[in-house]
Length: 234
Image (cartoon, rainbow, N blue to C red; front, side):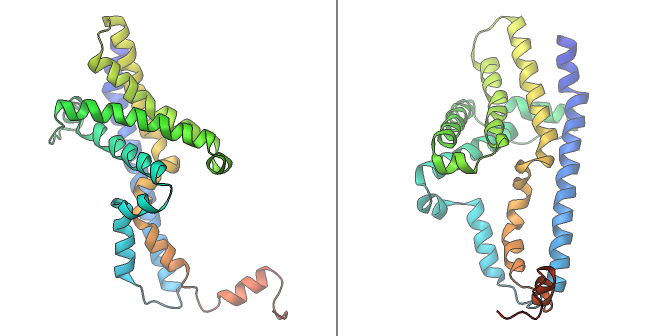
């Protein structure tokens, strides 16, 4: 099992990270190109950039949105996403793994912060999953992947917590660590091909929404032709 663990931490980690990075860059570039093409065709090219920027910043700092829309669910979701990003990026063991794999390191979380952030992320993930299952409006709109993603994201947090904070014998430790690394690698691969890619797309969402309402001059005729309603009375 030790050889499998070394392979998962080394070559497999670098491969899956490269797939994630290249996939997200591809998505970002395609979105930028799509925005450029839509802007060129737009009938009204006056963009309210201050409004777009303020709404984009609201996505990064969702204080108002949390207060307005389902405050408890929104708060849990925000805190879950904070832990989901901060712990994998700034955990000491992870930073050392990044340094070993790609030669880059940065500041790390204090031990107590990492401990409580890991626990809170697990708790909030379970709360969100339960809320999605038992809230009628959420369950009606949810797809299978909306239930599978929180479970998959929980695996590296739970297994990592077991390895870091619980006393287990070496065989169980290697098993949990292998599950921890493999689940993390799987998440890397899936990110560019699933809804989790919104971590790259969301900062562009306000630009897309604003341009979407600036139709080209010939849009009305094209819509009527598509609906076979050209010349019909409205």
